[in-house]
Image (tube, rainbow, N blue to C red; front, side):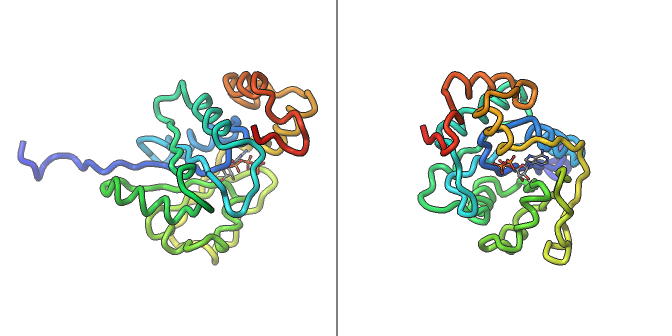
Length: 206
Ligand code: ATP
């Protein structure tokens, strides 16, 4: 076979950024719907180190361990913890720049819920991020579709099953001793309980 007739080697990779404190079924459904419905080869869960617009409760080590546990059984999902190695605030534009340099033949899809998309126009160097990845906004219960005039023309809207679950709600449920099974993957439920995460309302930074 001549080289020119080889099939394209371009990979289509989804990135789902988040604090994942803890990761829950909503995250996995977002990743799976994006993968299947956009024909992606894989989705990487990009764990935010020190998100400059959000404060986190658990240490990054716990959050990465929980995301690893959440995706362990799924060959199409993986964890990217590079943002934890960076000092200071985390900017998606920097992460996409580094990924594009490392994997120049990959097409990037940055997936986010409507709540996160509503804040896109305030992101640091967002135009650079838009230039490097196709942004995919998925529906989320309780959130309105963001104002399209603030988004790049190439944005993709994806309707997914509406799961009314959030990390905030789960932290509260763990703290109050309420039911959490089936809202988080079983391995995450065990991890939270065996490490006594979320027991104190003012935060566990363990
Ligand atoms: P918190 O309650 O702490 O704000 P979260 O549940 O929103 O957390 P994040 O880690 O901040 O979780 O979310 C990562 C990404 O996943 C964001 O883009 C968010 O919009 C999206 N997401 C989280 N839960 C859902 C859900 N149930 N449906 C759709 N998108 C979701």
